Length: 263
Image 1 (spheres, one colour):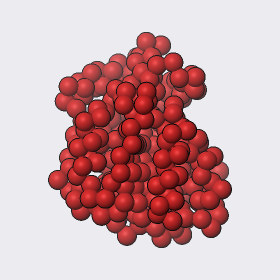
Image 2 (image 1 turned 90 degrees about the vertical axis):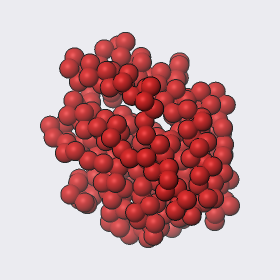
Image 3 (image 1 turned 120 degrees about the vertical axis):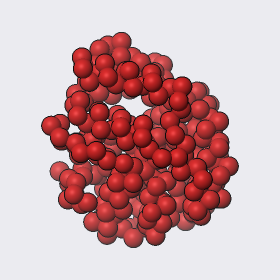
Image 4 (image 1 turned 60 degrees about the horizontal axis):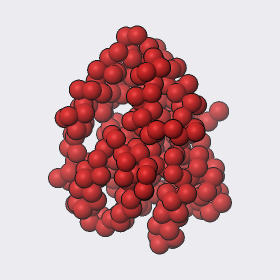
């Protein structure tokens, strides 16, 4: 299986290869590279599609150990992975947490970023009204394991209600180790507000947001969109926090149209 020893990490990744322009997909909290399968299936004929498991997630995660990290560390991981793969510049597609690290990569490694696709994400701090509820849920999860009721809550937050693919993700969540959950949540909760720096990001950006997102409000995403100098906006009607998974057709069409304009 493909692993890259970069930036002090053992990063799991998948790479379709090919000579087309490179796209790197960065997943959200509690997810992994597989959440972008609908996009990779749609785009791999024309683009080199790279997906990876971030620190504390998927096959990159060590179930026994996870050092504290920030999304700037994750941005460094992404830039190092691109260098490892011989990619000079890529379009960064990031969902939620993947958007947090992609925005930071655009700030600290602008030379590797050709454009941004930001799905169900934001530039601000976590919503202070939601953070205590998330913290209580995580504490119970780490101490007692993921109960069915808790799994239903997580499913609602990330995937919305009644999506047919949810059981596979619930099974993955039940396997998550407490140490990785803890450090990943700390990175989320203690991140900085990069809203004042968005004007520094000059590359084209596409902001996609589910209009039923229970984790990040449309208003927060629109604030990010308005602050980016060269951004486009797309609502996904009926979609929650993982619009690319639950509503792949409109998301894929929007990404394809955006990429066509770039290339």
